Image (tube, rainbow, N blue to C red):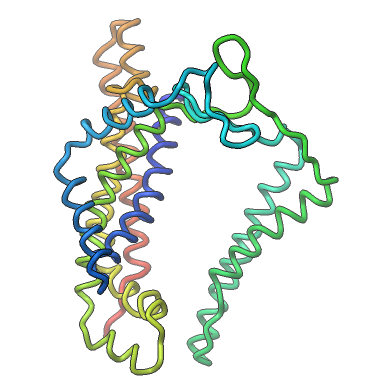
Length: 308
């Protein structure tokens, strides 16, 4: 269970960061600014041609060789420490209001989803655009803050302290997790950037010119005209890259991160049940891949352009 949760954690966070970084680099690749375009192209070429395992070793070496021991840890901010044991920082102490804040956040998302559906119907009837993204962000922050305020605004923090040879308290982001996440994100984002670039270029020039002719700004053209049409080209290969990132997370065993493969290998060594262990690894990764594929196929059908 611990190994599976670790794999899910690095894959979920990695997929989100990869989509954000890959989209930004893909858009920058098409920029009219020569420097921005060349920097994006250079990033893509370098990252695509360096094996992901070497990138994991590179980031792992940086974390262990470039940062001091816990006793000489860097302290850039109060309650934040950086050393070769990872990034250690303080967090709020456990409190009953945190559960209430989580439910308030879920309620904010549900309200935003309902308003988004209403906003689309309103836009289809009147042409007026409802600011869904801004409203969602504001509501997602406001409702949890209101729950926190009504509970008495607890501010107690769990601050890490150096005890012996390591820190106690707070939250630690290990070098193994950081190296694995950075390696997977930077490697996969280079391929996602090319997918995004191809999807944007698949939209005819006439669509862009028509959008500019009615007075839309560059950001509105990208958000309202180009990306909705480009998604039908982007989603299928993007799904493959998401699956690749999840499967490449099994390389975590090379840098000592306790993902599902590493934990299962330890179990195999202790029990000698190699067939059962390998079958379990195959089953878990098959489940992850099929779940991702089912969700992305559903999303692809949802956003597909309906033609007569």
